[in-house]
Length: 248
Image (cartoon, rainbow, N blue to C red; front, side):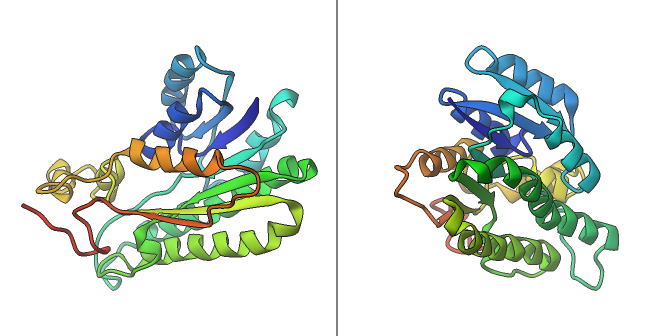
């Protein structure tokens, strides 16, 4: 059985991906909240072998220490899903809190770099593997008040394209998945726990669910070895672009 490592596995897309992949993969589930990791491990251990790693992808030292601490039988990683990320605030660049901007750059961009650099030594010797980076429609279109979040996701898009080129001779596939509006904890984090603002983000239309993105992740990694799905953009039916949504 192949092994998949998923970051941000404690909620949203990462958790949905773990649930979807549990029937066909052994799982390495990574996240910042150990109680949540324990909960999902207990649930999925009935289907497959699961280990958890507790770290923040922004913490370079913790990323490398935790991944290097994996049990020997989990050190052959076939699939890496770089899902962990965050959005903090929705304000014009000149008014945005600098710590929020740093959190997005380090979580969304440096997190992908740290985790991938830590995992590749466990993937390259096999001569094959698959990296799935979760980007965003914000990595393709810049929108007002989201300048740095968009910049961080544009970077993920560039990393995906560059990795695909650099890793091609090593037999490693790279898939970039760019979701539109998905109803997860995303807006609660962006609006710092303001439930009204968070709820209003998804009113008047049917947003994507985390399981919709998990289905696409699974579809991508289950393709024949000869097939590499390079870039997938997923929008709810009611969304035409980053800022165009048809609401009732």
